[in-house]
Image (cartoon, rainbow, N blue to C red; front, top):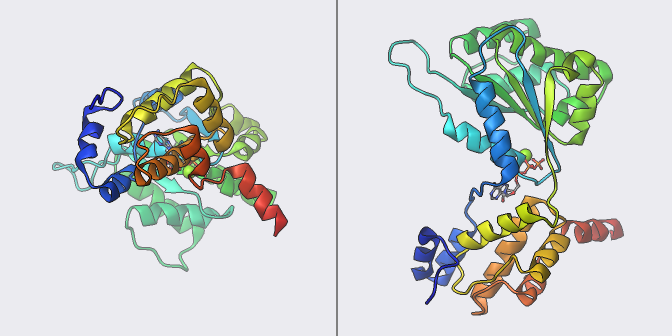
Length: 296
Ligand SMILES: Nc1ncnc2c1ncn2[C@@H]1O[C@H](COP(=O)(O)OP(=O)(O)OP(=O)(O)O)[C@@H](O)[C@H]1O
Ligand SMILES: [Mg+2]
């Protein structure tokens, strides 16, 4: 069998039973692509930026399901917490939190304290929580704070939104660390409404995929890690276009569609992704899901 269409690691998976191959297919995987490498590079630069009171920040913006969280998790995994044998506390290069569901300053502090396994009382006053967060984080030699789903803070009453953004600004200034916000396009609008924030947050966009060389490279990378016995030649124009149209062009949907078509191909002994396996895989794209929802 010619297995040039697979990585060596993936070709080994062909020895597995079909059910195990499907299980492997559904595991999280990382595929590097141009935009992801560029943003990872910017995050690396921020992490070593000399500490000063006015640190640069970054806002990573993209549609839902387009790889923002996977990207920052990749970065976080590269910079795990370190034991610090000579000090009291660990060293924490990257603190990652999800914004609370609404614009709630206490919720931000709770998210940080939870992440650090620091106990806190429900009734503790906001000021005291803020001070504790700063003093705990100071001991950890923190390098960066990443706030995912930052658009949650930017819903609801305007004054509460500002309070939350000011709280983040305060943490960044006090700790001299860069802030990295992750969110959808609403986040960019809200940050730009505040001039002081707008000139500190550089937006980096993760755009949707379109039919270009970079997209074809992505498809080729997917093909290499999907354990099918036959080459699918996903970069063939007809297939590439079909995948883009069915998925709507986010990496999450592309990945789900390819997985479903591959499972169909394994179960039906077709062993490659074709127009038929894509169309008969049972995959329902985001626009069809929206239409279905509108009917109920
Ligand atoms: N680099 C990658 N390589 C392979 N698959 C990826 C990659 N990035 C994202 N994916 C796929 O896309 C899915 C969605 O990615 P992710 O959760 O990062 O989206 P998101 O932009 O954070 O969406 P949301 O705004 O809804 O939180 C992942 O579950 C994964 O299947
Ligand atoms: Mg996400």
